[in-house]
Amino acid sequence: MIVNKFGGTSVGSGERMINVAHIIQREQTDTDTTPVVIVSAMSGVTNALRQAARTAAGGDPTTFRTIRQELQRRHQEAIAVCTADAVEATNLAAEITALLDWLETLCQSIYTLGELTPRGLDAVSGLGERLSARLVAAAMRGAGMSAEAVEASELIVTDGVFGSASPLMEQTAAKSRARLHPLCEAGTVPVVTGFIGATEDGVLTTLGRGSSDYSATILGNCLQADEVWIWTDVNGVMTADPRIVSNARTLDTISYGEVAELSFFGAKVLHPRTIQPVAELNIPVRVLNSLEPDNPGTIICGEISSEPLIKGITAIRDLSIITVAGVGMQGVPGVAGRVFSSVATSGTSILMITQSSSEQAICFVVRTDETESALEHVRAELELELMRGDLQRVDSQDNVSIIAIVGAGMLGHPGIASRVFGALAYDGINILSIAQGSSEYNLSLVVAEEHVDDSVRAIHRQFELGDPDAQERGI
Ligand code: ADP
Ligand code: ASP
Ligand code: MG
Image 1 (spheres, helix red, strand yellow):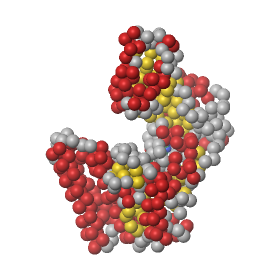
Image 2 (cartoon, rainbow, N blue to C red; image 1 turned 60 degrees about the horizontal axis):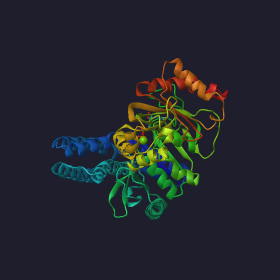
Image 3 (cartoon, rainbow, N blue to C red; image 1 turned 180 degrees about the horizontal axis):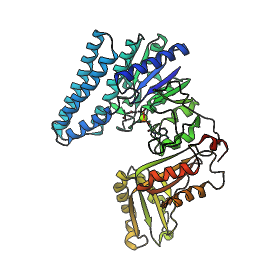
Image 4 (cartoon, rainbow, N blue to C red; image 1 turned 180 degrees about the vertical axis):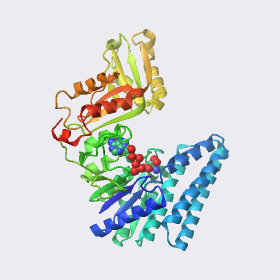
């Protein structure tokens, strides 16, 4: 059995939904089994919903109503295209209206209270998938298939960390098998909402922005799928973000470990948590293009190949480097441990620990929106040492980015780092810091945000990643 996930662009209009129905219809015929489908919200809808909730909380009584009207219009338009049957269209329109009425009431309460809790934001954010799943199921029925929309809050049981919930796998496996196996056995395609789950008490949660990919691999694991297919708007995992590097190339294969690094360091094509549930069971993942369904895409599997040496280059933005420095640093016992545990207490995750060449210092990289809180905690922890003058600085530099160069064969291969540094030096780009490889697959450096795109392009060009022949020659 195959779990298929379709992203926001792939379900972005009535026509696209019909396209999804045709892809699944063909798959059902070809494999003679009924696949499971996971869908994202129509493109842009999650952002619009979050804007509705945020503006309401900020005291704006009109924007959420305008957004509601726009969402109604967009889904109505899609219904008109994807359902042939008048009764089905009327029923579906009534269902969509009821869900959007609920949105408006919820935003009205948020407006009245002047407060938006993480729980409230999840309830609003998850509505887009609840709408799109109903429409895609209807598009499938319109194409003559049997299909049913299923809310993942019935299947994926999570902890209560709103905005970034984690699945409780045993309970999720029991619920998803009980609910989905009978549908598939009867030939009915379950069209499941991505992105959302619910706590044991049934309160709606989300798994994090862009996490429908993760929903798919969670269900892939729980249903012990043969494969998980992630349908998106490019031909697979590429050597770089095609919006930055015009000759970025699609990779035929990549290992779990490598793609996990690429997605952790910003490659939007897969959510960073996607790989873990499938790697555990060695379930292959394919990344495919819903607009070019015959393109073979990229296969992600457990096999690690050191060819080509470099699989991809990616960048993560909106970061800050925090530096803790002082001449007396060496005399302060356990300082690194205290710095990192105080950052952990602030709830901030450290993306990278870097080396500083010039002084006695500990440097680490965090997201800029978490910098203030991390600084506060570190300063409080080291108050005495700062007062005594053992440490002179606990400060941050904003507007920096991490560039990650990923490839399993890379680190055992001499000369890669010097070529990377040479390529950047040639373009006059200053490297602020070199990171200790967070894994054996990754060489990372920090540059000023203004140089990110040029850095990615320079390294891509240096290793000729856009040229498949160069890759075969082992360059
Ligand atoms: P979906 O809505 O299908 O989940 P996303 O927009 O989340 O799609 O992810 C696909 C996009 O990721 C592509 O359109 C591409 O612009 C971007 N992207 C960034 N880095 C990469 C990469 N290394 N390989 C492929 N796509 C990438
Ligand atoms: N719709 C959600 C988001 O935009 C989840 C997803 O698309 O994967 O974050
Ligand atoms: Mg995505």
